[in-house]
Image (tube, rainbow, N blue to C red):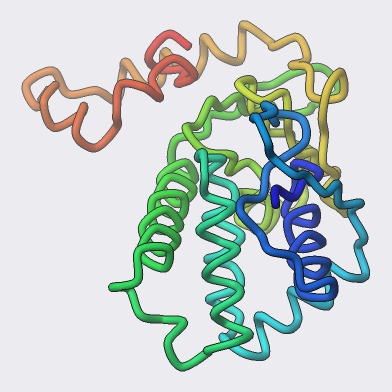
Length: 241
């Protein structure tokens, strides 16, 4: 049976809850927005239930620890095909066979660990790749286009780094973003995640600083590409973004 969910971690956790409650024979879990019907496939739509999702989340933390819970979240944010079924098998193991749940020789467990590490690495790297530019009303705007859906993983870092500044980070690939207003963090999507008009003079000042601080004799393009992958250059102000 294929479980159809909302495309969110809460939707996935709600599906886990219902699969256990109803003892469903889960073949795969797919977000309804991207589901492509297959012949002779039985489907079961799952309504996202925040309370049920929270119960599963707490159960994961109790049985396997907070680090494992956040690793599951990171793997889900990869948006990779078939990751939901690997996550389902892994989470099922946490509740039914916790002693074997961390066995990385098991294919689904290995897939979850490997994917979570890739997502976490990109989120960590992106903390150094976000370039804020000034927009109207002193709002600072950073534009990113990451491989994985990591924008929410950046929120706490930048809220701690710039607690007294208004800023937003927009993932233009997905039309998602976060907005911090010196007090709280808000999630953005659709029109709310549109990029405000950028102050070109502010960007010019940063490019001028970067150029003046650059030491021509120490230029090393190969090392630069290794430490700062070319795929991120598009949104780096000093690279012309």
